[in-house]
Image (cartoon, rainbow, N blue to C red; front, side):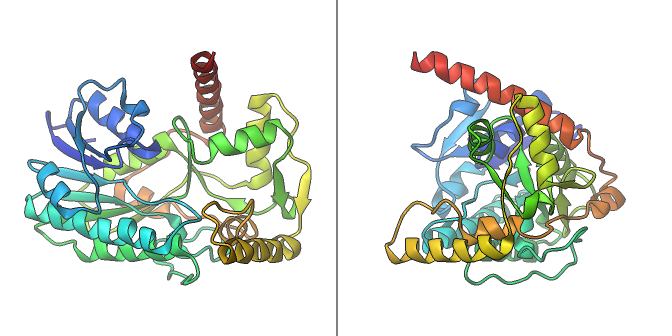
Length: 342
């Protein structure tokens, strides 16, 4: 991150997985950090950051941002609705309108740069290896998350100009400490023997350890060649789902998954379950849905060549090292929650 002391930084989505790790790194580097959090959000991950200035607000309310962003030089727009299920309008409000509000507030407050966190999902899971940033998006009009993340990213990049520099980061499957979205779902399923593969887990996937992602985000905030560009964020190397799960199971000391379905069965099952859930207006996702199966039924791997070439980026942690650190955090997390429940 920047070497200048006391840089004024503003972070949206600070209480979440990515945002909390980012805020800790920024504070440890000696920067002044303001963090936007919703009124009733869980702020547990921020509890041990006394120097963090919390501002209550919502990115869907432009007036909240105009007030909260005053004085910021760099804005990290991390907040977003990252889910494979939910009300379409809610996705639009957060991922599109919310992004527009952030960009407008940053410009009104004369901020220097915005680092916008997008997702590799914007590519639409084309089923390829080493997908680069210039690959055309595959439109998925039936999926609210993919559609609105792509729209929000386009809006952010279109705003880049000499007065407001904008950089986009496209993370793949983020994992690591504070990951309640995937780690706290996958690990218990593995421990109970209820996790399974599609096609035997042979398809390439794209994990990115949280510290690798934050490194790239901090670099994007200051590098002179970053503005106007988008950068993929994944761990170095090639890992498939079976290898990833086997690495996790070695750390957990459990047997790796043995259940597997061919994609020829998994896809129609996901379609049927999703249609049924939509018909009955279920608020919760069915056990499998088309987004989840689309992500694992073919190769989903992305190139880091551009970040290495343009920004001089290199990953500090391998996937194996990231998993080791993630499982160590998981054990501490579970132990703390057992004590709290006792």
